[in-house]
Length: 162
Image (cartoon, rainbow, N blue to C red; front, side, top):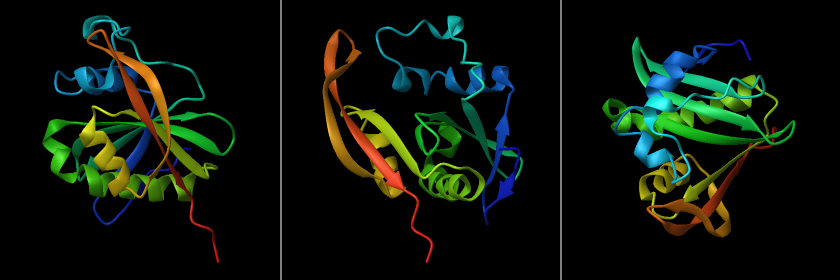
């Protein structure tokens, strides 16, 4: 996945710059939304350097919007995590739809999935806006603030080519 692609508005670029990834993921407005009670404090967090994990950085022009983390479960089903910087929250839906199109065009992935805590209404809305559908509920599977929270499992399949 060495391709950088430009939609009409957004550009996506895979990166190995783990310091950039760490800075985005530990942003004070992002880290509390994406972590659970078992996560380290932000100053101790280190992103995975596993070669199967893809960090896809999103730009609009030269402005960094945030990033998407793509983790393959197998050759065609990948889990996605979203970390958009607060300055881009108003553009997150459009950027995420463009990211999905990028994934279909530039990777072997045919299905994107995500597990979203029911308390994260913004992430659920973002997933639905990108075209995902809820297909499952993982009960009491996320620990935040000492409380077990259900997660909604979302999925989105690549449209069949005609």
